[in-house]
Image (cartoon, rainbow, N blue to C red; front, side, top):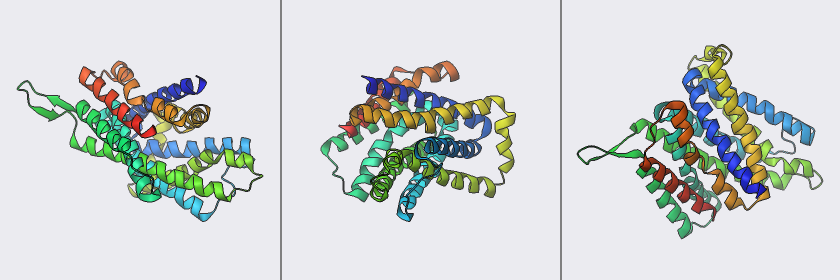
Length: 307
């Protein structure tokens, strides 16, 4: 049961990561938040690698390993997180996390495209169920009985982009992990065990480069100081960093090793359901029965990919 409880804890961590990220995005701006998020994550991951592997950077890497993880970082962080953090501002963290259930269908499709993994009927069913759940949540009904979208189209596009970036980035990370595992010497067991952390650090480096260049090109470098002058925004940013790419990632890796991977991934995907009540308490978002049912259906659809 320890692995299952840890998986639920991860879902709760990611729930409050999304809450903190929404607050920080509104105070600091998505671009500024992501620059600080990537920078601090690189340092924290470097400390972990130094403690367990003896060096604060990935060891025994090759150009192909870096290429896979950098490409994954571009899709998952630069593209995916840019969409996600902008969607926090437009549609809020609860709906943004709902669209993150699309990561599973996008990951399954990308794995079929790049790795030749079979698309089973369960995967196709999962896609249909996930899309159905999202559709139920974002559709409203007028007093005349007409259906309409409750969310701005821009927010929906950003939410889909966030799910796509997460799903595609996940598959590219898997390819990076496979390439990395083949080049590490057999005696370097400590390095082999820390591959996910090393890979995450490379991905974060790509994120820092992408967000940093964008910050410079858009002449927004002065906004970096907001993290120090805006106490609420800075505190929320630190909460999002610690609970998300640091503790959340670490605990998720431990959970997957302690229980069945499918069970762990399903429990960790409960964030769209868990976030409904905190979002109501903190942001005053009205929760409807339709949104709750839609979120549960979307999560159930995403869980089918791990069977």
